[in-house]
Length: 402
Ligand code: MG
Image (cartoon, rainbow, N blue to C red):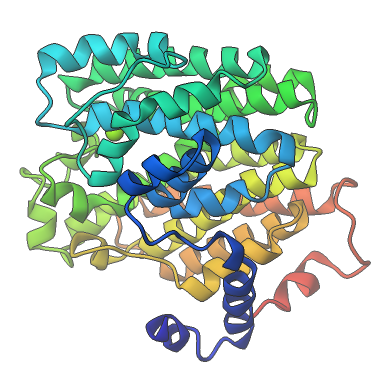
């Protein structure tokens, strides 16, 4: 916390935001007891929310933004996919057993007798699978329309994971496909759940391309940011077709973080990620419910902030690059409408323009892409759906300090 305060010391609005977020999240403070102990004490629903808090703090916070009716389906959707991902990620789990299970896991979603022992990379993940019956029982209380969406996505994701378990991400097409399985499908499933809830138009569930892009934008940003961690864990999701243009070995970037080739490779992947922004904007513009909007938009602006941070940044090759906690708090508090999204994106696109290097082989494309996004943002800002004062685009946006 002290370190976070220092990082924002010259940005008083970030300090205020950090304090507000901290005070606001008091009631859902993390339970200190291990999940395995909570599993014995808590009923099914309480266990599921405790598990969510343990396995993903950030998701547990954004889920609080949702309308009451959507919280349980989205919480379960997340936990069920997390259980599937736990099977996928455990490299010690024999692939002869793993692959068929990934493909058939969706058949066990509501199976109150199903559990799995000694699989999972952490204690919390192992507990999630060992006490799966609690998740199954809570899932069986959901409306069947929600269940159908969750089962359909789990089926598709499990099969996609099994397809990719033995092969690597080579081409850009593989990369898009892998990200579709592990993240794009989540976007599609959420659209389905929003449509079922009635908070959003029924047609949202057919918006496959833009729902997919929402997931891809987040996933690709994480894959870029996690270079160092993934290298350490002996895995990589950077498409070989791209990185082999810049180095002969994947760990070469870690050994030469400041080398022009290392940064060019990083920026090549950032350029590829920017491609999804127009779809993400189109998706967010379709949302009607303010709470659903916040749930979707907060991760998008956070990813945009992270993408601007990792861009042309040699630290990606040496460790974890994170945005300031104060900045994250501010984005969380003020991302209430398209106006705020446009403001944040524009600010981060400008931060990237400030860092562009004309020597970078991707500079012309990158510059073009960033300019196109700025034009798109300006058009959204001028559209009648955004209610704002008579101040011009530039005037309004200049108020925001860097
Ligand atoms: Mg995984």
